[in-house]
Image (cartoon, rainbow, N blue to C red; front, side):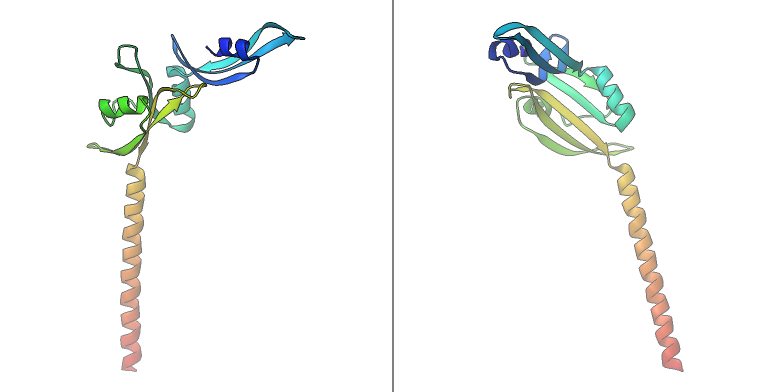
Length: 171
């Protein structure tokens, strides 16, 4: 559709496009000689599993890309979240129709913050949903350690202050 739109409007078209093979980021520019349209030039990258694997490798991004199939079923196009659970099929379906969601998932070994955002195509329509996961476990452990250190430091300063007050009151 991006190629057709670029040819019909005579303007460059760029953005996400849903195709038979999944999603792709595309830029299509019409080529003209005078007023005559000679054709178009297209640049793009597929947003499939390989794209998400690279995001995972470079940025440790855990995500799922889903779209609604013609029959209304959710179709998982890419997944780097592995066996992590999601917020549920109805939440994913609602996001794929335009309603964002966020929440927490607690598993036996992780606490996950989850954000599901609808993703728009180049024309502004909803193309699917992107579910992004952030493992909060390390942050929670660090916050707990800082809290314990602050409490220990506060208690130590309180004991030192009481000892100093007792020593001064004695003398």
